[in-house]
Length: 320
Image 1 (cartoon, rainbow, N blue to C red):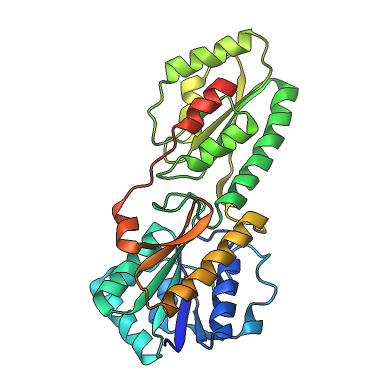
Image 2 (image 1 turned 90 degrees about the vertical axis):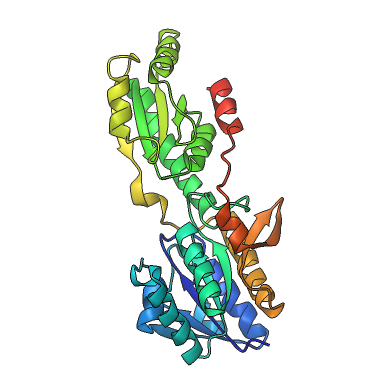
């Protein structure tokens, strides 16, 4: 049986990471394991920035945004020598298994660490972009969406008051999920995502037609990976019948107290991560599939690209 596990958060933070840490620590301690918290992600692993985590160490953290272990990016860990050094440090500290909470880059590093050093690794998908394959949702997505919706709705109020168009840029370098879902939930007139090419002339004509029918506001949500809000504004200038304003939500989307959904999801995944270690099932990511947690091989997760649900855009165009 594994006697000691390590846990770290890596890459961009997402709401719910603390809930995942809490669940992992308390499940492991309850089952007789010791837990080493690794600060600052892979950089902290290489720097031996460790902290002993007990049952009470994670009290009161579930409702907090961000990550109590903090996070960073680490170029040294991207090298074979860096990962070899990390494996030696884990062995030196008698850490037999490692739980990694993060996005695609973090999970890729975890998978390579396992392949090259043999350490048991379990991944928990934590990213607001929801761009990890083989899982319906990642930790932090729901909170991010609620933040976007709240802010877009506020903008919609002032857009109506002044009869303006607001172009709202949200996060999503390779995935348009946040843009599509928040646009659908706020009744946006259009959503621009990386997965679907946009015909600006055709879109301008549609918005102009709606304006002529008496519509008094316009919300266009754009994922940062598709275009910048400024680029979109230039395409629409003088073509849609509205005075245009730009809002970039930026890193506000990462923060805030996690929603109930994210707290529950993160707790379930943290619990399941420890159970996978106890079953000696390394090299897996804990996923959410059809409402249930599942263990999926990291190699399979990383070999696939998450499919964008174009139905979201179809529904939005009908309802807008």
